[in-house]
Image (tube, rainbow, N blue to C red):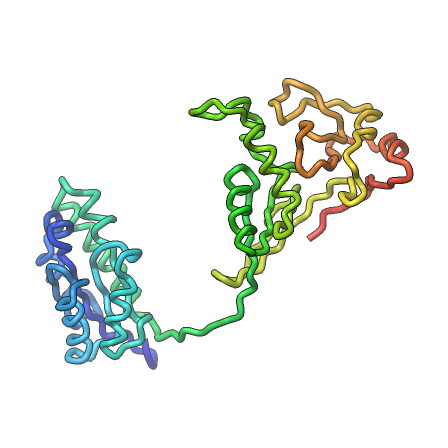
Length: 320
């Protein structure tokens, strides 16, 4: 779209052998495309991704003075880059290209309904053309990228992902909303299908995450906001008030021993009790106590018992 004028759009429909043409009526779709506002050229070909198919695109761009290109074919994950390159070689900006997936989203899932598949393909194509009419040239630019990553959720999957990244030399932030990592696997006795001991597998991984030099573990934290884009995200993390200063807590448990408040332990679905200042099980990582402020009566017995360590702060607030 230049100078307020809608683009002159060329539509190219791929048969994909019989993957599309065996279900969708390609000729009917091509004729339909030529009736859409903004379309000045419509064509179809058995394999649009082939060299002759790409030549059709490049030739039409020049002969029909196209401003934008739509290819109705397979998933963009397969050939989007192919058609962007053909668009660029034809003399257009590679970003005035739009792809309509009429294979995975129409012919393959409606193989026994050719009429309905064709109508759906028309809908998909019409939407792609509507977008293509408004596309504008874009520029590719490079920006500095900090070599860090963030893994959200510290279950066994998140732990594995963080370890892989960290072992590759990438500084990794591992975010977990609960006071401890491990997720649901830490609640299991055995794992399927080998019936191996769950904690025998998980506990060493949890300990390794906690001491890995390239992993910054943020437990009892939640994602508040995500800005930016791929390769350059800016994430705001809320560190929920634990009530315990992590650097000062040694996990001795003296505070829980004197706490007068008892609550059902969520870790074992209420089968056992926990205190208002607690760890949910003995193998927690990090081994730091947490205050349940919803049920804490602020009697300060834990503060007195903690004594000179001064690890407990009943006035702690959320931090960002």
